[in-house]
Length: 304
Ligand SMILES: Cc1cc2nc3c(=O)[nH]c(=O)nc-3n(C[C@H](O)[C@H](O)[C@H](O)COP(=O)(O)O)c2cc1C
Image (cartoon, rainbow, N blue to C red; front, side, top):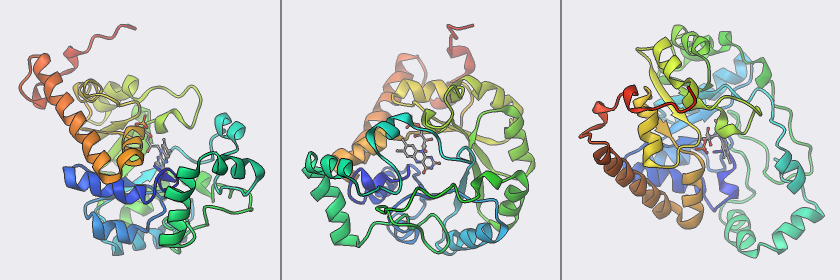
């Protein structure tokens, strides 16, 4: 999740270290505030998620940076070619970059805990907060009068560029934001190792299908590929449903962010433990001994 460092001090690090301590992967966003090099030092094994433009040179430079920092898994997010129109954010005045305004001042004065514990603490400890991992050379500041940047030629990113990424990136490559069997096959044909079936947590296209609804068809389209899923996973039962329908793995977004905001790394570990306990208990309540016994037959589709 991008801008996690705006929700809690060093939340990117809390998420990465909490995941590492629990033995699960964490995906560092391109829009994170702690450098990908520092995260890799503190939590080796973290995955890096890139927002890449349709520009060969920018792609090559970014891949080289991630490679030098010893990442093994590169995730390319495919579902943000242009910024979404988030009307909640239009109403509450949130934008990236954050624009100094009376509204922002008012929000700050009415949330002093956030101002001192997150925003000013980041300034004191790390200097001006920036999206340091967006491009090979760094990225823009979080607070600026400048208008939000256009999506930086992300709308030009094509499958040809994914081919280039595949040739240049020696590690495992994952495409995030796939919702159709056709795109899953294209990803497999181009040599991606895995996909994440995702609608970006429902934050991009109003009316996009829920990932769980298309999972079975995608699984069948690419039987040999690693198929992962995110979006709306909150409980052990949600994890089991996705695995039963063919996912190899699931990710959670917001629940871990909330956990990091409440109690940093400890909160992340606590949330992971809750989930693991639920998965274990729910398996037993289904009468199963291990995840390998899950199958699509356990799911009753009430909408069919
Ligand atoms: C605050 C926030 C920021 C996000 N930023 C990114 C991002 O930078 N890159 C990305 O690929 N997905 C991003 N996502 C989408 C998540 O990676 C993930 O697909 C989604 O949150 C999963 O849904 P869940 O939150 O219901 O678990 C973001 C989601 C949230 C809530």
